[in-house]
Length: 115
Image 1 (cartoon, rainbow, N blue to C red):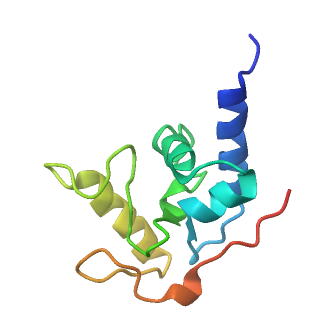
Image 2 (image 1 turned 60 degrees about the vertical axis):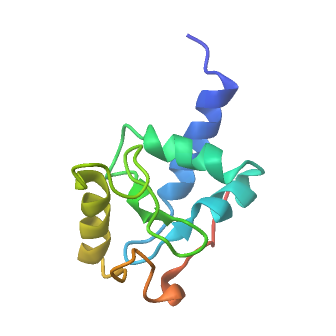
């Protein structure tokens, strides 16, 4: 079966996500800029990531510093499970957010992607 351009782009997103070190986060916009793509396309690839958490899509946040979505959900679902899980994964790595879901320390932002 041939790999589509769509699947190829998702694989590139996953390769970049794998470069983000533990304790750091990047943004959908930073990944998109590196790939000459759009933040929504990056978010879509993250939402469909079948390799999480080994491919750490939880380390991707909104450019405003907002925690963003996780596993296809933006902010909180009715159960709140997905974003709570993302926040817990990041907290375990030392990345914290305030009560509004905003990144507390922007010095953890990372964008040193390599081809």
